[in-house]
Image (cartoon, rainbow, N blue to C red; front, side, top):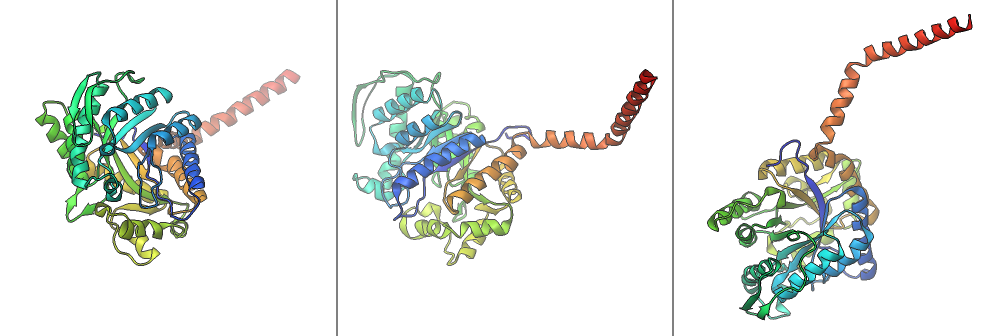
Length: 391
């Protein structure tokens, strides 16, 4: 449970979303520069997506991106957000992550999911049902391999014969693993069964009366109990949400005119991903109003951002990290500024730092008059003493 003095972690979930038609090389390097910027600002985590179609989410291998980002950064932890493990041989998923764990000296994390875009899985002959069924099977294999077991198993897509890892993880006993969840109970079920973390990508979405956020952790706890294990710590529960802030609400609105329409169009007309239904607003103002009024996110000031995080804390009962979904609603400069304002003014509110400095200021203000007089008395005393010395 998140208490007032708990340290809520902050990070980003970087799919990413780039408008098609632009220079992809520059876009990818802009993503690397953003992660470097977040590291300097004190963000805790960055999760990088895997996608292969539809033209906007253009990182095909989060592991390769993380290896590049790790060389630029010092502290921020880097996760695959997510590795679509249904697309891969589970032995190689585990093996690559162990390598990444060593290369980053323990800053790597494995996020697992079935794959969000049907246009990805269709190219390798899999349906969304196939990928969800493979998620559970492949995740079980990965967890066993990382425990040091030898696995012989035939899946729908691969045949493992006495499979085992030649390296142990750098992190003792293993790097962190989390399972993605949007709407279905698949992710929470796997997290509860294996004692893993949870990435609630649909944390702020409510579709057809299904309250994803309230439901997710209930499923985790129920599955953990079913398998005779304690529920995973809520510190491993990450909520992904939408924000853009500026010094004023009007400035924030002007900022997102740059790219919010592309983001809406992508989910309304391009990506076959109905769980990320973001409404049917026809103009930019309607899109902004929809984000703010439906509780999906916060476009405005740092106070709006604080209120949104507080609402999620209260609604969920406590979680470990809030991840800002990368969206490029604003241009790169305004986007970086938004992340900076959140680090400066929102972090302290949820990391036990704001209250202590405000209390120190109040204590000093309350005793200022008395201390000011003692300062004046000290000056008068030393002046008188100096005059006596001269005499």
